[in-house]
Length: 339
View (cartoon, one colour):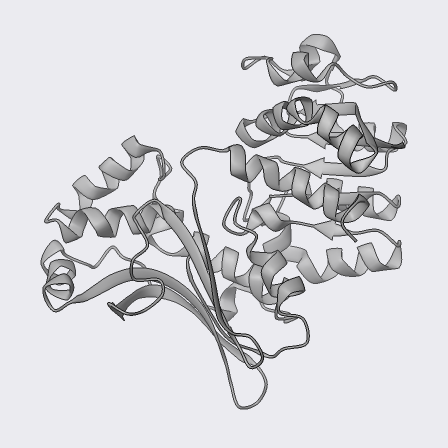
């Protein structure tokens, strides 16, 4: 039985749900994978808690909006925790910050420098500093895993890195943003743009401030992470050609459907003659036989085309956060049990 000491930063929707998954799968981890996973420390924006023999997972998962400081220490930050506590793996699940990547970026740097594996669904640090973080992981003999940062529970990165091994990826196409997919589906039925945005917000797939979604930034970030981790590029946000959906009308969207076509919001990477890739996100007109055309408004999907394996597609319908939270478990198992 291998003991794995873990630290968690961030106890929002994803972090708390992940603790519940760890609690639920405790026996599976022990019996099937010979892993005794102990959450020896956790921190949020208000404080932290340390228990070297392991925090009570049920208690942590059911704080019900309270800070972890309620069972630990107010003001105890994640950088202090990482310096004080010996751990094997660090789960970083704080909110996305696309301007600075903080607080996740600094915490990930510290963990990697201390020789601790890192698993994160946090798009901010990966979009802003993927090359640096990958190099730090390699220098310190640990792994940086982030399958949940691209399309939630869909194993998009895993397919590209592992299952297409040896091939040249010629094209990646993905329905990458639930909010835009939902808005376009509503507009196809005649709903005005602003009403469609409100419907997406009520459904829960669009943030109160819809800017990141409808202007394409969320899809850009996901594509940059995919390009760097799967295509081994050194892509930056500004390398992606971006088009939003704010200029579209219900009439324009419905005309596509009447012609037997469908308008989808697509992120794509297309192989070029010079060996690079053209990266773009935006509304695209798909024919009815395109693999992504049948995807529903609440589905994410990716289609890889390579020279060896043809075209492979994977899709997910993720209506709540368990699949995204469970990606942290999948990444941990890829480090300790699935190699």
